[in-house]
Amino acid sequence: MGKMNSKEAAKILGVSPTDTLMTIKVALRRKAKTCHPDLYPGDEKKENEFRKIRQAYDTLCEIKLGTRRKHEVADDILDHEFGRWIKHIDPKRREQYLRKLRELEEEDDADGT
Image (tube, rainbow, N blue to C red; front, side, top):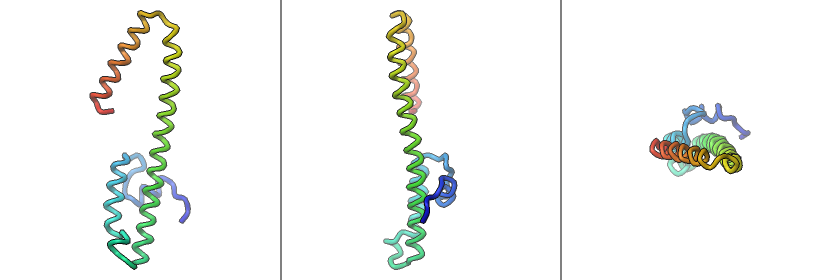
């Protein structure tokens, strides 16, 4: 089997390429029940179908996790640059910025994001 792209992988699992990892995992489990080698021992056709489903899942997870890592690196860079920048402003303004930043983080935590 060759390398598949996200659209092909999503089509195999019956999901959208933009769905969450949890949705993708649920789709894998649902599809795997129809062709898992433990449920259909010796059935080569089902085994090949299972491999294809698993490859689709691996492809989508790899893309999702790679994207998440890129965002985390970008956030780390922003945090570092913000820290360098804020050291050079007036202490009163610095405290205002930091207070506002804490409020925004608390709102994000309350929203679950």
